[in-house]
Length: 455
Ligand code: PLP
Image (tube, rainbow, N blue to C red; front, side, top):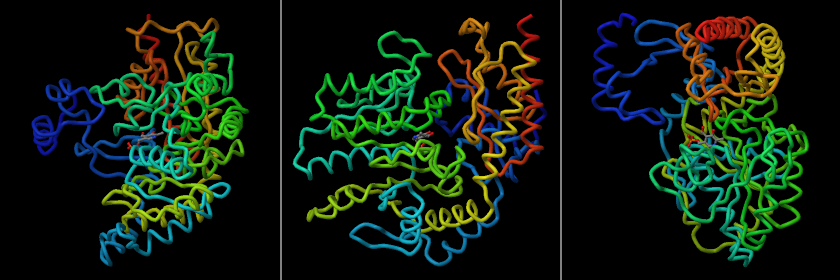
């Protein structure tokens, strides 16, 4: 147990008493208190109120892409706040940063994704995408097209519609909040018939649902180009194109949830670009501001925009913070820095360094397997027997142990996977070679400690 300074001890007590945390066991929190109170940070590091420095190996929640303590982003926010902190975008009102960002996003987004609807985060973006898809079809006279198909293991957020689309059981089942009309297909990892993880059936599992429900009832298919919270699963090469083709064949909109992937995380501005796929709707959040301000949005194809603007009634959807000027000003600066400092090129270079580190870990530790990285969205797994694919018993929770050991060594990572077998790594995109190596050294020590516990 570390010695806490007085201020930290007081904060822990107040936190226990008054603060209910998201995605946290409330009983543990209320009894034991917060494990860490963040105070400030610089680059890949952040400091606790207790004066300890941690390596942020997950960019907090996969979002602090330009790293901590980025002065220019803070200044962009301050400058805009001093001019006008907030401006309504209802009733057609607009503001300069929101307009400029819309133009920039149209230029950056693939294909003819030329218009944006702003939100304040990822869940709101996905809920918005579902509504826009249904609205679009009703404007086309296709009133029955209401159903949404998502993938098992996908994470799309926690607002009611997004939670229903989320295919991770703990979130999907929370508090009986699901709605009808959302279906789940097995992901590309699994053959829907045989359940074999190594037999990618491409889009077949989605096709099964389309054929069963009838294409005339399906509004959209949503997926993350690379599943994040479901375990960092990179799709097989032809998968996204096959889904695109299937959507075209049946007249279904393809929604790409780029909330984690977007803005350079995977080594391209948007992950769909790895496979040359243009979705009909593209949701973003997180990396658009590197977490310095709350912003999300849905990009839409020209044809969807052109259909929507024919509507003479009110588009009865929107958030107080849609098009928030400060958030948009931060996003503009964030994108400017991404481009100016060649951050996406750095991401691809550091992917290679990380993969070298993975090779080293795999050679040294017999339980390490399935190492993968696309840009700086990465993971490895811990199996009891990697040759036969035998998982550890759930009670071993190998990734949880390794992540805890890393935490003790001041590196923050995250455990994923239904068997707690996946360790996720997603550091800020500004990371350098030496810092990647520092992470690998800590992970190496943490796995050695885990192996000792197995003896
Ligand atoms: N979609 C994806 C792929 C995400 O990873 C997340 C959050 O982690 C969300 C949506 C939800 O975003 P938010 O938490 O901003 O509502």
